[in-house]
Amino acid sequence: MSSLIFGPVPSRRLGRSLGVDLVPFKTCTYDCIYCQLGPTTHKTTQRKEYVPLDDVIEALKPRLATDPDYITLSGSGEPTLYSRIGELIDRIKKLTTIPVALLTNGSLLFLPKVRNDIINADLIVPSLDAGSDTCFQYVNRPHKDIQFDQMLQGLIDLRNEYKGQYWLEVFLLGGMTSTEQEIKKLAQCI
Image 1 (cartoon, rainbow, N blue to C red):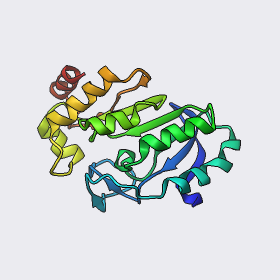
Image 2: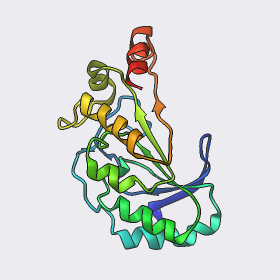
Image 3: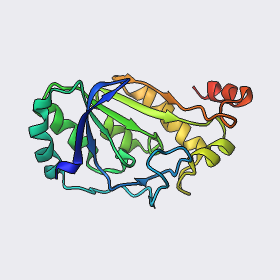
């Protein structure tokens, strides 16, 4: 159970972050060319309860004493694939006043259910790595069921619906998404 929880680890953005890993290693909607964890071994869009919710809560409780700045839903795959993420956020907020952050690639935000599930997080940090479908396919290598336009619309819909802190993380890849033309496309997206 303890492998579900990691840290607190130092984070440039979040201070001392207590991580919660909700999906098996490299279970993701993308297979990004830059991922520090290596190639995705289970590319999927199927949301499910990969770990029993009660197990996550029980593993988290004793670690709250470490007094992190954030409890961060992130880890070794895409956390919005965890089907009970909304219940988890609500249960964490009943346990502590430590803010809950979600680091997500944003790929499933086009789904109203996903946006509704994460609406009670204190901070949501989605990613946008490309301003065009060509770059999106090259850099993120998404699951076949995820289209660039729908991913982008999901980011916009969340921004319009969500009242908490929303930090869009833009990743520039040298020679690919960092060109003037691609930066202009990214700027048009946001």
